[in-house]
Image (cartoon, rainbow, N blue to C red):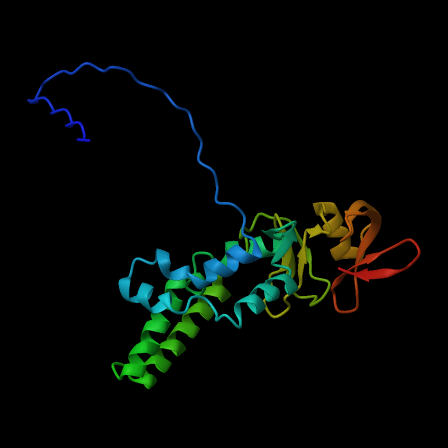
Length: 254
């Protein structure tokens, strides 16, 4: 059976006005990308180079990606162990700590996936004799110096108008209270207190009590890993790590 011939387009000239047979107005909204699961994150790590614009770097990452089949799962477990992400059912959700780190480095060289592609491309050239290994080694030294300088100059959530109090750990610096974290401005000290504890954000006043008195009052509404509510004070241990302190004097690490 012969297909019907497609209708011929009419001849058109500049300035012609054509009738509109009908229109529809549709109102839609874009949706954010779904949260990663462990499976989708592993897949994204494997294919991370597909969005690179540099053809050489994209090809270099085509057979590698971030990590190797043997190390990718371990990388994700490290994110869990350092409390950068947590599980919510099947989804992987960043913690406040993870978001602070992300905001600090997202525009820095250390977070650029193109760097991995460039390194893989350089290693391929070394294997074929197109690049000298010493040249690559020197470039790594320059890169390490650059990212170290960038990170040391970065101020987490910056600003000099935020509240602060003397650091109880080093006695020399000031602990500045930011939106998600309180941090000593003495880099040699490193005292950092994250505002969110077991599903509850500490108030500025509670953070000040912790920093000046070593302990808050009893705070209600914390949630355990089993999602059970509990009340406790937040205190420092001997190493200035935060712990929960209960009325019965039992302590549990956060």
